[in-house]
Length: 603
Image 1 (cartoon, rainbow, N blue to C red):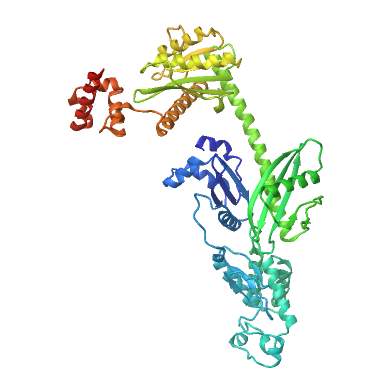
Image 2: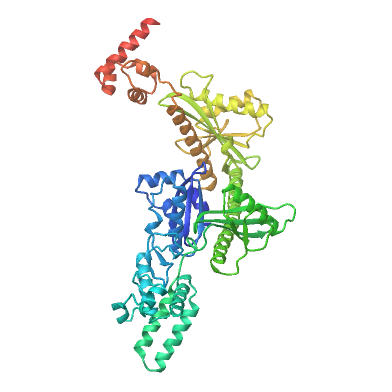
């Protein structure tokens, strides 16, 4: 993707946190990245000088960009991690296992402990996270410890062990960090209530906890205990700014599929979030055209079936925003009213809405683009005094390799844009040696003979990259085909950037910065690029056979140097041995002269 191509879509990228995905022309996922501002991050790949070869190579391969919006930069980090592990894109580094990200666990045991862990064990314990920052987890645990005292010891506090008096309180009890359930100083009911409060904090249900602290703070203030009141105020501030967890990776969600739908002017847009083991591993938004006035419920049901099949989903729960009829064995449909599943739908809805906004933005840009192109084509019509607006333009150029192996290339522009399916290349068949005029005549003749035989539309304007000689040769081809007057033929001289018409003595010079001249130069540059690429492909496939390489002792590099210096094999044959030695050395010059002399004797 070029910088110009990127600029056409840059305005459609969101200015929000999320992840972006780069795909090549075969649809292969090349790279997944995270960003707190997607548009700025993606733009940096196309607007900055790239020092890294790997990054430069990545940008060259990009053909399509997709993105998913999330709520926070931390969510973007976690979603990026999940997708990289799922798809292992070529240009991403290998990420470590999930155990590198910390969780907070409420242990499945009597008087449960709460602590940081990097491993999830299927023992019935409850896990919260993962969190992107160990520091944040420790800060949160320290806050919980100061606010709601719980035990930290690994003792087996069964009711029987406590009644037998097997344990004694430790220093934590005397410091006020634990209420001593080991000696029955704290009841199980009171301890469980504390655990319930902590779960509220970890789940983000903070309002009840905050209200509790506000009442406590007010009590301290009325008792003139201002230091204690300030301590509680800090706790409230922390709770109000604390974001409990990520919807992107959430162990309470397990395996679910979430879908949302938005319908506008007979077109439906459906977003799909695939959640596996609590992590979003796939996102997709599609456009669904309706024909029979189907209801949103009918559209959503049909689309769900297609997307679940496409992505091989085996989730047994489907989360949707409205009730639908969907008969799939052992599959549960959920329309959440709140909680994590509701938040998942909200994230899905946010992405489908941005998808719609992006399409509208592209349509507006395309309208402006089409209007601009129409104005340029009208300007070309006026500048060149054409009988019709040149909505179909074709341009020819000859190309050769160091003066050998001539070919012709033709590019086609329709409505001011490349029509690459109509590009053509012509391997010269009737011309011997290097004859630019005859090569041009052959290419033009073959092109329009085919269009004439197939009754296809002719272009309004044909540009010949070259001076009066190439233009005259192209005109001869049209005369032989009896196509004079069917199209306007114009030559573009390479040095002076001036235009020639058949039979005119004076050239036409358009203002260099005019939009009409810019488009003509763009078409000329495109035919250069296309012709050179064709040559490179043929050389890489060994299609061009350099006869110098048949000489024992003369390799490909030497042959290319000779052709680049002397332009043709005939010129090489005419050179004295001393001149050849100056270019390729004495020994190879002797080999060449001996070969040519022997060849001459055999003729």
